[in-house]
Figure 1 (spheres, helix red, strand yellow):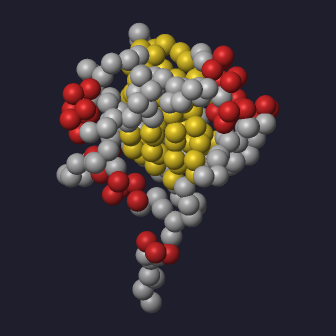
Figure 2 (cartoon, one colour; figure 1 turned 135 degrees about the vertical axis):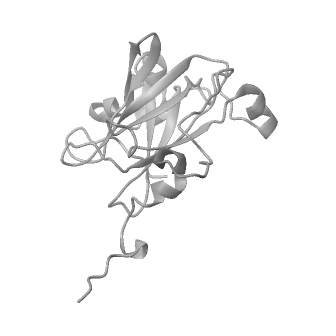
Length: 196
């Protein structure tokens, strides 16, 4: 008797990453969005944001897909294709963890300014992965923005003991500014996720 395999409608991911991040998986067609938010000409402090998506057993997830959105170094989203072509700032990135040798996400961008008065600079993140029927929302704040973080109303709404799960750590690697941010899906140190 032949054993039948599950169809996509009977499983939860991670097959969607192959269609939404095809270049990362060496398919011949182009991804609409990449891990690059900026071009070399984009004004602002160029940074790299990297980390792991970590499951409940403390292991890196090799097939997660993440989407990042943010304002530019002046606090604005692009308003036209012409503006994107001129500045190189796309405001959005999509990346899968399945093609990095260390199973990380790596996003190249500029450090955002505050989007609105009273808000700290941050990057919005959506996480999709196997075993989840719907995506989760979180934010990345920066550890070198302590005063702005202290005044941010969204960060202030999070219990103080858990706020550190939303803070990326700044380091320098080979002259480049890198912010490290791991997303823990459950268990000790679970990242704060927001209901939107």
